[in-house]
Image (tube, rainbow, N blue to C red; front, side, top):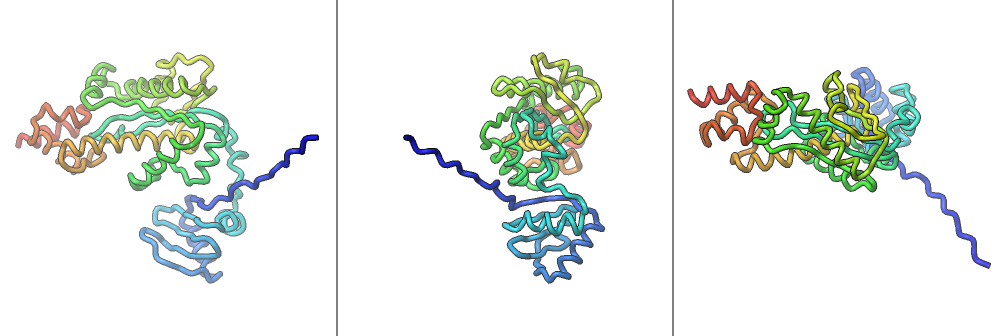
Length: 316
């Protein structure tokens, strides 16, 4: 008679990191609560306050973000933060409030759209509920909320190393980008839609899912017109990066943009700046003075007003 297999029951891994935006009033209320209960204050750069407590550290940043970290994270959130400060029960209820996050689906986002230097990058990530749970526990955030490049690259590694996840990108070198911009009638949204469609097709070829969420950049169904994927529904909405799979796509797109910017910086001989401000304009003018006006197309999106201003500045 064969022995019966022993059934093992494993408790879910407790969260050791939790982040949440707080209002100024909530920040003040929490600061008073922690001080009243004799938590030990300590200094953290860019913080409004920081305290050490039983198996947990609580840091409130000037940006309005609260970070709770340590073995006592869940207890603090469930028994202090939610009942005493925010009055809203959220931890552990993501699957109740947002069940669609935990369905197998695709998330699509881009990076580099507002930067003179470097490519426009589209990324598509395909993931399921297990991946989303891991990312939430690991503190995944959309790229705009990640301050440093090193943190974004670390998150990208977490996303790519997650079992069952597919991450694909679409971008072009700068000379090809400038040619494509003209090809698409000097319409950036049409070019971005084409790149999104490329990334989606590549990801679905590896793992097909029934639907995807796109961070809406136009009210027109431009991406849908480029796609001919059977049994796939593309949804669009603003603030789509609240969906962890879209947030993951934003991180993958940013990581790719960072790597490409490093290559361009090496060619230039100094770290190229992001955005399109005065410092960027001066660097673009330096490229023209150093390599010639024709070389700017190897570094920059020529349709930006800043590019024309840089060429004019270099001639002075």
